[in-house]
Amino acid sequence: MLIRSAAALAAVTLSASLAACGAKQDLVTSAPMRTVTLMLDFPANADHLGIYTAELKDEFKQVGIDLQIKTPQTPSEPLTALTAGKADLAISYEPELLIARDKGASIMSVGAIVQRPLTSLISTDDKSVDPRKLEGAKIGTAGIPYQDAFLDQLLSSAGVDTSSIKRSDVGFKLVSSMTSGRVDATLGGYWNIEAVELRLRNKHPRVMPVDRAGIPPYDELVLVARNDTVSRDGAMIRRFIGALMRGTEAAKADPAIAVRALRAAAPKLNKRFAAASVKATLPVLFPSARKPFGWQDQRQWQSFADWMTRNELLKAPADTAQALTNEFLPGEGLGSESSP
Image (cartoon, rainbow, N blue to C red; front, side):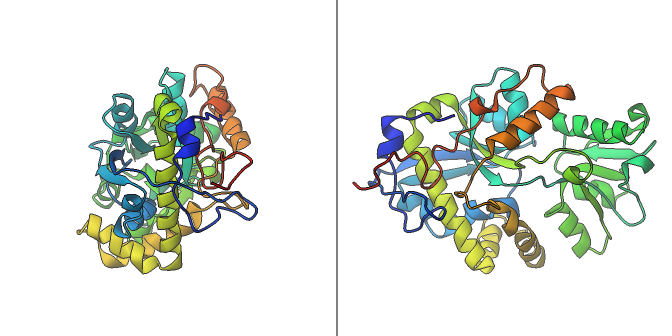
């Protein structure tokens, strides 16, 4: 959905790089400093390396953004905080955003942060993640409703009686719930975060990403804004995404910077784990096609939304052209003229 405004076209900040070959270059004017509040989806981890690297390098401040980062108390909090006006932007999940819109939330994705599913079935040691072998298992989730729906779909497709599963909401404690034996497996952990931590702790994780178990591909993490912010404050969104892109590219060029930035934000992060998770995460932060940073494939979104509707995760068919916009990505939405 292309929502153009005078601010969206006027408030672009000087960028030294093109988002993709042949893309228009962002040519921007300076902006006064303002506070922007971002609600993360989870405590600081490698998925946020672009944000924290950009912070370390003052990329946000250079475009007039004094970024205030909030950490949620629960994984389902970001969109609630965003819709309540307690954050200007939030990081959430494509399925969560589509469900929220299905319930009437006036929000949309303005860029993909992680370009493929990370959510996985994970177990440790000799415990299976084969859905066919999970009859009667104890399975923990992060407490996000669509993950329970994912689990039902994976199990029922494998012929497993879903009522036999003992479920528990373990919140952010996905790793400890497995290592303590509280659950046999989890669905909600990421192959680039929790699975990496388990491997480094010699817990021999078994991992099945959901897109290898019958769930269609989707953008795991997306940057979300309220519709009114998109309409009235596109300038800020464009500046934010440009700074985020430069931070992510700096991390790609020198992953040690990302490790340093993450550990500055979360001092308890083990350096070895931070380095390993950064290495695993970097490849999924950039689109595989020659598209701008943050690109969202609307056809893929529609295919995933249609799957959600068929599987009763959405009450009504979704028009994903209204659920996302690439308008504010580097080089996009600038009109035919790129000179001042």
